[in-house]
Amino acid sequence: TNALLIVQDGRVVFERYNNGISKNTKLVSWSMAKSFTGAITGIMIEKGYISSIYEKNLFPDWKDSRSEITIDHLLNMQSGLKFSEEYDTSGNSDTLEMLFGEGKLDQASFAASFPIKNKPGSVFSYSTGTTNILSKVIKDRLEERKIDYYDFLQENLLERIGLNNTTLEFDKSGNFIGGSSVYASARDYARFGYLYLRDGLWEDEEVIPKEWIKATQTPKNNTGGIYKNKFWLIDSRFEEGYGLPEDTYYCAGFGGQYILIIPSK
Image: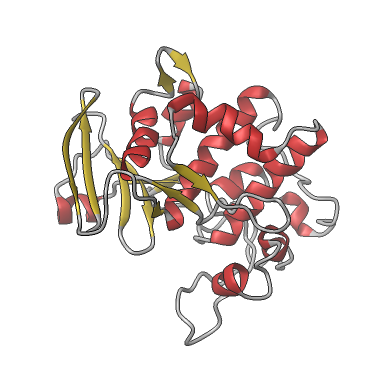
């Protein structure tokens, strides 16, 4: 473990780091980045830049059954796209091809090119590609308004809650790699979690709508009761194994990165 930090009642009550790691060290998020993308989506809807979670016909070249994919489907891993989420090189891994191979320069377009496998909304299928597609929707909506994606993220999230030791990675297409690529200190990750614990408020200002935060804590249908808006929810298996309270919800990344949010504590 490289970092363990606990915030309670607005204070850091526990903080420890491994050798060579400090409170200023930026650590890779991997899929905890997906929860950042979920937060940004909530901000976009609040501003009216995305009409609703039910918006569809998301890209002009999605003229087939992909036109039925909604923002909600992308948020909750129910796009129906045929995308193989594997993390080793022993077989077919669309994830590795997207991140490091053919798709690396424009990861969202690579993921969006896959055909439909299941009816959108019918099957939960965890996909980093799906989240990068959602990030591209956000980018496109901002570009329509001549708003720079990087500047928008800085002004509406990072600067507002003091994420001063956080870097968001973009690919060559100018799209935030929202499925995997945030680099931040443990303290900055804790600030992001604390924003959700406080129902989207920071210094008495609303950063993310409270309704969006509350909705995130209720599982989406067809996810097995464990997922909503790019966050994981505690199910009975997790609770029995680790003793975490039932109201826990969390960000999770490959390799064991977690931001655990526990309102009852």
